[in-house]
Amino acid sequence: MAGRDELIDRLDSIVSRIGRLARRKMPDDTLTFGQFAVLQLLFQRGRLAMGTIAEHLGISLAGATGIIDRLVHAGVVERTRSQEDRRVVWVQLSAQGLERMQRMQQERHHSMLSLLEPLSEEQLETLVNLLETIARGQERQMNTEDSR
Image (cartoon, rainbow, N blue to C red; front, side, top):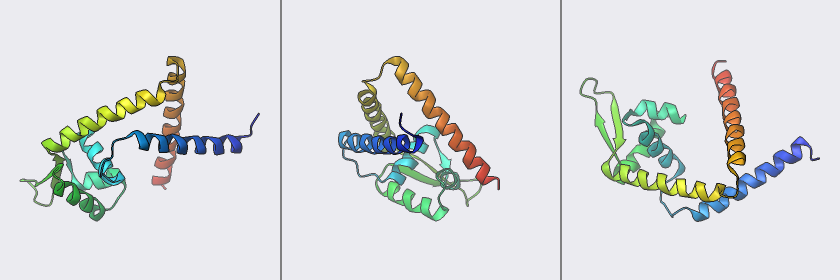
């Protein structure tokens, strides 16, 4: 039986291999990872303040502003100032951005279906439960580090 370190190395290699294969199947899109993360956040949560976006992504307000500037220029997000507090800037998906995210979500779902097709329902449930356990452990670790 393989040791823990060997299994971790194998897992790292498999995840990289799956990532390379998945990228080849995805449509060519000009979004950076940061831009996609912002669009995904806005798609899931709706209109957000600039500061909330920066905080959620763990980047500076200046970094978030740069990403949002490029997304506004691309026509996929809209930025407005709050009427109550002019210091607050709201960001939301434009109609074009919403359509693009809906299309991308559908493409991602189809890619996941294809990727996970070899698994039985039971294997898929096991995989999902294991990944949820890993995510919760990482969240606990980050919360512990943030509270120091």
